Amino acid sequence: MSQVKWKISLLFALITLTIFFSLLLSGDKFIESNGNATNATAVAGVSSENQVTYLINRLETGDRETRLNSIAELGKFGKLAANALIERIENVESIEAGNSSSGEIKSYMLLALLETGDERAESTLSGNFEENGASNRTAADEAGKQSQGEVPKDIMQAIETKDKAMRESLARSLNMEYGNDTDILEEALKAEEQNSTLYTSFALSKIDPEEPGNETEKLLNALKSENGYVRVAAAMALGQEKEKAATDPLLKMLTRDYPLAKYSASMALGELGDEKAVDTLMMELKNNEKDYIRSSIAVSLGKLEAEEAVPYLIERLRDSKASVRSNAALTLGRMGNESAVEPLIDVLASGKEAEGRRKDNLNANADVRKSVVLALGGIGGPKATETLTGVLTDDGEMVEVRVAAASALGNIGSPEAVSTLKMVFDNQTMNMGIRNGALLALGKTKNQEAAGFFIKKLADKDFGVSAREALINMGEPAVEPLIENLKTEDLKIKDETALILIEIGDPRAVEPLIQAYQ
Image (cartoon, rainbow, N blue to C red):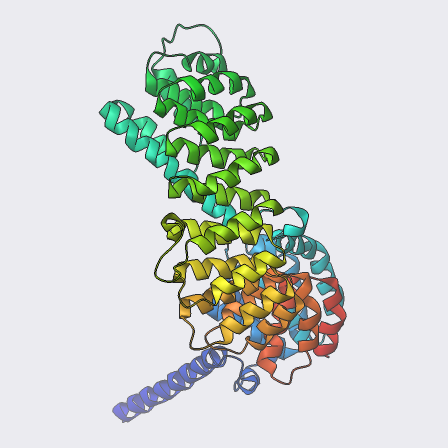
């Protein structure tokens, strides 16, 4: 008899455990359902209040996907979830401290609050737009704002790449001449981020510690050291420190010293920002026999924003070395002087094969051609746009040059440029690298037509993510087309559109967002 009771008790315990685990699993299942509204409210025996509490707890412990799914489910509980959402939105900075996805989490919570229909959604949304919208719009507007003299990002990146290559070239030359004696100096030259500390410590380590004067005075004296690599280190240190007292001695180095010291002086003078150096730099650009020094001077004149150097730079488009032509072109693009457009177009034309021959083989060099098309994008105008369109659509042109042409058209951002980029992207027979280049270039424009193009791509499985990022980066010009898109009957696209508007943070979107989710 006792055995029967024992078996009945065991069976009852197993049934109880089975029911418990079934409830637990069903509670997890509704979280993983990616937005199935019936799951969120059909958990047997679990009250809505407890489900909200459960979802809030998942925000504390879940991974990114779990947290976003939990936020989406909270929106379906209406006003019951609104208090919890508002509390977390108001304290998101402290709650999400150190979390790289905190901005995304906040955007999803604002969308969920809209879905609850709570009357406080409008004031909460307005407050967040007021707080974050201005900085978001400023950041978006800064990207590629040529109309106010901003240098396109791709030109600056190309120049930075040239800078790094020149420093590495100097490091290799020092190694060949001095061997292990310059290891620390070479390390400083090759560093991604330039810092005067390494240059300074190296130069001072070669100087008598008893020598009088402060650090700057010692570095200025080091420019006259008998040791060549000490002069190089001192020049680079003073350039990074933007010590204008070094201008005259650096100019003497540039005109009188041995080649490696001249090389470092030409780079340092560009960092100093002293206009007094311009005349000497222009003469050295014209007459210096070393191509690597001419290349460096071309870049330095751009850093000094020396408009009077434009004719000298245009002349260097016919230099005997491709590297000098390339650097001169990039600097002309950085300056944005329209007088350079025709000479730059001539470089492209003379490097193209016609009737089995080229007028100028150096201008067929890929680096030269890429630099020229980027420069044309930096200057802009109808002639530049027409030429870049020709390069982008020329099947005989190198792919990397055509991708650069797409980027350049994106910098110009005119209706004609946008039309060309859209045509290229929509051409499915086109090289995929070129199509992607056109897509990225469209993302740089501040054009409502381009915004409409990206809105249509939000549902595209291949390009939807890129379209979303492009619209956020566009900022203000994308707001009106996005507001119009809130009327879509596709709920997923509607939510995506709302999230983008929340990310942009433009106050014009507040009322349309509230209306869209009433």
